[in-house]
Image (cartoon, rainbow, N blue to C red; front, side, top):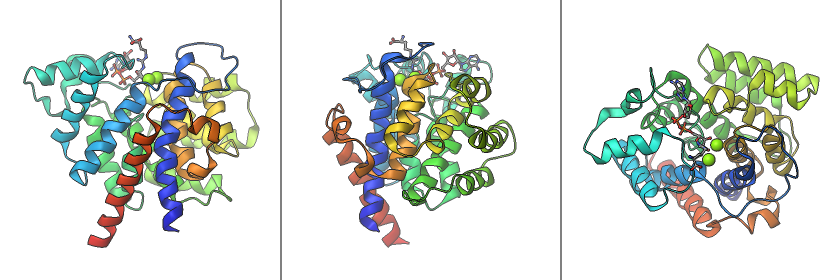
Length: 306
Ligand code: F2R
Ligand code: MG
Ligand code: MG
């Protein structure tokens, strides 16, 4: 049982990098052709997920300023990872001494950013708190809130983290989509995400075209138009490979929908469920797998301390 959970932690982090690297070549393209192999590099989605995992491991839980500082350091080292337009500007504000307490994005966007940058990196939160829904919501909000303060970005991060947690708890040989969605809806606040989850239940019975999925769930850079698409990609397919290929085939924000689908699917099927040829090609594979093992150790120690 412990071994299976550990494999799910590794599957989720490496799955994020695979979905991201698979979709990176196509980000923004309206029509997707020849999706079959991962590209050589992951993008900001994985770079920021790594920052979340590093900070949770170093601090053995969430520490706002430590995580914010890690985001800035990782960006400084690799600014070419194709970050969204907001976060680098927020990092510069932080470097110039502005604290902001999670509201700096309000200088850039009215009401804060509703981009998917908070949701795309939140997987490690779903892993570390997979058995504690209250902490998932709280820590997902804080983690996303460093750069994204709009309610839709915060709730998107919480829903994505909860999907990863439910995938850790799921039996990979017998995924019950309706039960999974029922639990996710119970967790989700009434509002636009609840509505999207209701639509997913209907869509799963209908076998819709890609065009219909994009029309109903979206494939964009906004959290509300990408988190539901990732959940659908996971639930409508039978294994890791078909889930991330489907996610990327939706077009639009392909690296991010791929990364979020990879985080959920990897947490469900575990690292053994990931095609070996993809796993072998992931950039910084050993480092990412090491992080997943360290995160698992933090989780085990949290359980012992309880
Ligand atoms: N951005 C990219 N890819 C394009 C990279 C181009 C780059 N110049 C390069 O090639 O190097 N991908 C990554 O960005 C997405 C995540 O973005 P994030 O972190 O949420 O950024 P931001 O700036 O907060 O929001 C993204 C866009 O959403 C719109 N938006 C957000 N809030 C808004 C508001 N309140 N009102 C109006 N618009 C709002 C804006 O268009 C933002 O630019 C991922 O796809 C990741 O892969
Ligand atoms: Mg990206
Ligand atoms: Mg993207």
